[in-house]
Image (cartoon, rainbow, N blue to C red; front, side, top):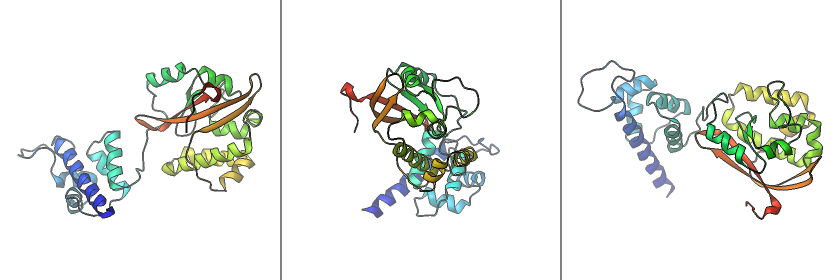
Length: 271
């Protein structure tokens, strides 16, 4: 069964890249010449991607060949794949994309920002570096010391900096020690896809320098997925609050996550 599935993925990978090659105009990086076949030739794609023609041909034929993530990335650029096509290419090859998402400087869709603003419960969007990019009015009220203050400098909306460097977070977040340890484990799991991101590396170094608790928890090498579940708070004005958390991935922005907190007493629960 496993072997049959692997063969099916190899064939689909070959059919997919052949279809993408044939849709490209001959002028896509090469000198235009008269030809009878559609798109680029195999040897042209191989040359543009910096791979051997034999290697590329074997992939199109669905053979079992070794494919590195960086070779796939060059192939994706040569074939001019969009984000969805690129993700599909790496999934078929069973490899991790070395550049799975866009930059944090990318503008978020206006509809996404409007969606967050319209949510009646606490909700916020985090980017690749876990910086809050948008949030609801309820989130601003809940997260005192994080989302309710004017921005004075870079990184002030970072969730990790809030949890570990803002003293008020320890009284706001119930069972702070366990919640903080879980957040660090979730962040480590997130970082696995961005090991070459220098900004993330700087963030980790700064947190390790400025927070002994973060440094200790980071060295424990815990890894957890960003899951839902109960979240409780001791709010300075609203008292004890209990929520159920659910997190969504924003379509077209794989590194951007929307987190929503639902009032646990409202009868809506998430597994």
